[in-house]
Structures are given as C-alpha cells and as structure tokens.
Length: 399
Ligand code: HGY
Ligand code: MN
Ligand code: MN
Ligand code: MN
Image (tube, rainbow, N blue to C red; front, side):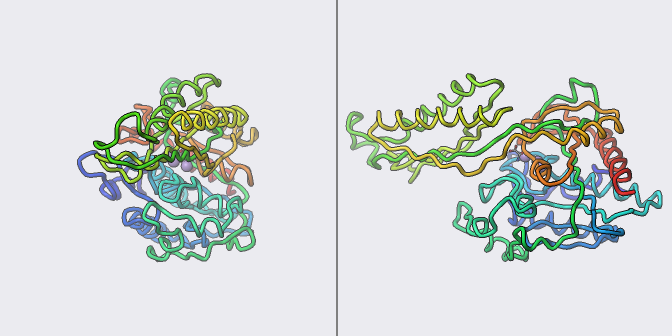
C-alpha cells in the first residue's frame, strides 16, 4: 500500500530545474521518459497489464469482464518550471486507489485502467491534451506526427527516441477495450477548496481556452548603426500587444489573456529583431467571448504592426471548447463524496474525454492556490483523502 505522497516522493528529484526549483518534464524527454518507466514499474508491481495505445499514452489494465471499462489517470509531463503535483498527483492517486481496492479484496466487475496521457501541457509540441485527443479521435494523427518542437524534432522522432510506438492510432485503430467512464483526480489550480474548507472537490466546468501565435515581421538591423526613425522594429508592436491583451481581456467577463512566451529572431542584444513571435493563451467561460477577445486583439495587432512598418500574422495553434461536465456524473460524485462542485480555469485530459464518455473530475485542495510554478502544493492528508475519494468512485463504477 502506498499513499500518493510516498509515490510522489519516488519521483521528486526527476527533472528538477536547477537553482529555481519546479520541474521541466516535456513529453518524451529524458525526465518524462524516466517517469514513464517509473509508472510502468509501479503498475507492473500491482499486477496491472501495461499497454501503449500508439498515441504515446500508457494504459495499465486491471482485467475485468466485458469491455465497458472504467478508466482514471492524468499526465506526467509538466510546463517548464511546473509544480510537483500538476499531473503526477492524479497518476499517483490512481495507483494508491488501486492499492486500497486490492487490499480489501475488491474484484472489478469490468476492466479498470490507470492511464497516463501524453503531452497534456502541450509544452513541447504546442497542442495541449494531444495524447487524449488522439485516443479519442479528436486530433488528426497525420498532423500530430508532423508537429515539431523548438529543435525541429517531430513527435514521431521523439517517440521513437523514447522507445514509444509512433504508429499513431487514429479513431480507426484505437487498440483498447472501450472506455465507458473516466475520472481524473488533479491538484486544484486555484484556491476554491481553501475557500470551501474542503480537502476534495468536484469539477463543474472548464473554461474554454486556446493558443494563438502572433508573428510580427520587420527589418533586422544593427542596434547602433540604425537611427531611431529609420527602423521597422517588430519588437515594438509585440511589446504593445502584451499590454493591450490585458486591457482587452478586462472587457470580457472573467476572461484571461496571458503572454508567457515571446521569441525574437535572431535574438541578439545588439540586433534589431527581424521578427518576433508572441504566443497568446486566452480563456473565458463562454467560447464566444474567447473568440471575440482574440478577434479584437488580432485586429489590434495588425494596426500596431502597420504603425511600425511591420506586418502581423495570427495563427490559431489549438482550441478547447468550454467543458460542462455531465451534470449526472458531477452531482453523483458531489453527493457520494459530500464534496463541493467548482469551476476550473485549467484545461485537463478529463475535458477531452468528457466530449466522448461520461466523465468526472476530482480536485485536491492546494493551500497556495498557485500552479505552473514551484509553489504549487497539497498537504499529505488532503492527498490521501483524494485517493480515498477516487477509490470510492472506482469501486462504485466498477462493481
Ligand atoms: O494549461 C492548462 O490549463 C493545463 O494546465 N494544461
Ligand atoms: Mn498544467
Ligand atoms: Mn494538469
Ligand atoms: Mn489534466
């Protein structure tokens, strides 16, 4: 029997960012591959039948009759410098829940799977929830194979290098028993449960969210030899877009617009950039608001570029619709667990699955409310409460 925290302690030093803390675990890089190997070992030690699905996801099966399976799981990849719980807590809690069920002699009445999804953060190949989208047939395998990371490595090359099967399984080749229900446990990314005074909560909605790339192009030149009035510097519209994003977001109810990544080319201190890419992460409770926000910012980007004799190109890189979890499942979990329901601004694999099968999501209290940063935290007792809640759901659904 292992608690989630004991399991997380096994991997606490994998992929730590030196001198800053937090984790850098991009899909199929050395750290995340080490976590995959850890998971396969843990699942095997519990007698689970481990299989990959050709989409980079790992499925650990507790066999049961029929094919209307129950699945639970999350992800092991992180954002650059992410916290210890975002993803791994859901995987560790699933393993801990299996321990509890096995200890009481539980026998599943249907196949039960613990799953690790690939590229949930989209941190390496730019498309969040890539693994769960491929498994559900809501991402095109050919497009996915061609996705490249910052070094130009394709997804297929990265999978091969990590010993994973790059034969992506589109909707016509999902080599899995049919998953009939899915539940994900995740550390809360916010302070909702702190305000509720509850260790565990149930997700009601996920804000719609997407990623857009704003590419500004001007004229590269010498920083010292080029008079200020003789420039077409793309860094100027790029910088102005960043501040305008905040102003535009404030005009939509509880919308969020973030620029966390910006890439000047060539990126020399004494060089006027030739181009600057700015990635926008925009989210809102209503998809129409997110779309309108980005529309407004795109028009503004073209104006700002023109003022500097530059051009602007806007490309949508990914979009996930607002998720409203199945009210029957949401209310069942809230009642069974006597837990509050709450929305989240963070995307999850459960959001992908929810479009295909009855899906629920559990949150574990995060006293700092911070996530995607080293200060992300959950108390050991709350993590154990989360695993116990997950075991209760799995027992109920797998009878
Ligand atoms: O970006 C998100 O909301 C999630 O952490 N992938
Ligand atoms: Mn995350
Ligand atoms: Mn996550
Ligand atoms: Mn998730």
